[in-house]
Length: 117
Image (cartoon, rainbow, N blue to C red; front, side, top):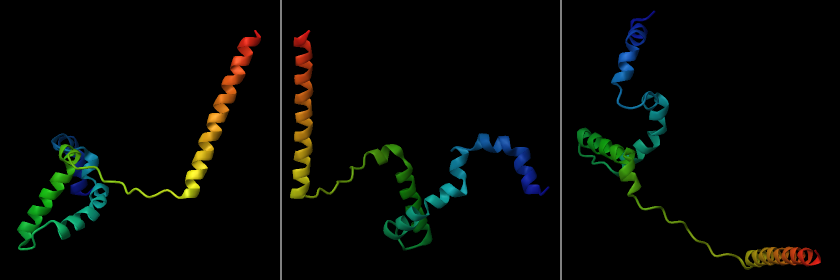
């Protein structure tokens, strides 16, 4: 058994207890899921004067985006409203009128059954 595997198996409980975040967030899959964001943040939101400044800005941006409270303060994205076609409006009006007719018919039939008793 390799020494690194032995150390992980032997000291696994201590390692897990020392972790601040859940074990799943330390996995490679979670890191790869953020690669797109890392590239975008490093291109758009970092200073390119030195590596230290770039990495500092990138780390700050990642901390901001991972904080749930700060993320909740962000304004919700505005949805684009499109104008409805005339044909679509006619179809909706037909559907609504058909529903109203069926409600009126069902109310009339319930009144007739109650008066016949």
